Image (cartoon, rainbow, N blue to C red; front, top):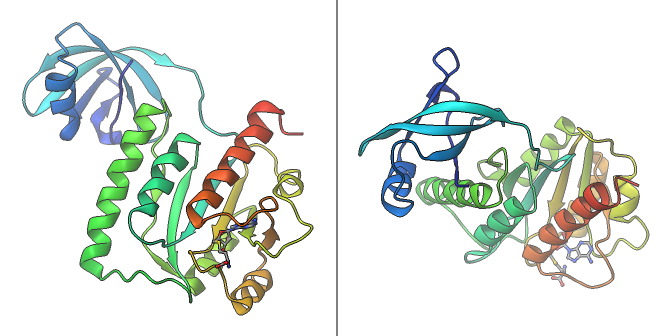
Length: 250
Ligand code: SAH
């Protein structure tokens, strides 16, 4: 069943109603050809999802009655934030779309010494809006409870400071020979927050790797081959899903 994410203020707990507005209205009425009495799923910003029945619809909004709360959980047991060195072209879109399907909790694009892309404030704002839309659509398609958040662009120094907010901060480094992602996962209990930093196309300078380690990040290898920057994040999320959702976190 189709699901739609709404802001918290659109959920009226006392009247047990949800209002859907914006682009989703066109999707519900024109694409899905939904009528009064039909059902859909709506999820709020806290990850609570509800089976809803459509009560009223017009061009501006769809008013739904909550039928029952849904209890299935499709989120990864650990919160994974992908810090992605801003890649060229539309690769960031790929990382966000596929990373959302694979369960990423959030994304932080960052600039480091080997970043080649340049974004002025106006372009950055446009990209952030587009990335947000891609994350929302991918989260709907993947039947997730929440839409990953997308942070504004950080500098390398800002990203290193951000590491303190996490239970585990990792830097994917192709020259790391021994520390595996699997070993890193073994220190992580469900519910914890992990930050995984992936370099841009040109990778990290030696100095950046040193700085990250001084800031408390642990380097991890992602297999024996050199992955493209967009593959590295998706490989990591797949491994984390496999570890926690298939092997039961062992
Ligand atoms: N410096 C290299 C490769 C960069 S790959 C070069 O230019 O030849 C881009 C990013 O993907 C790296 O910075 C790293 O974060 C990640 N990455 C790719 N393959 C990896 C691997 N086998 N182990 C860990 N990280 C990897």
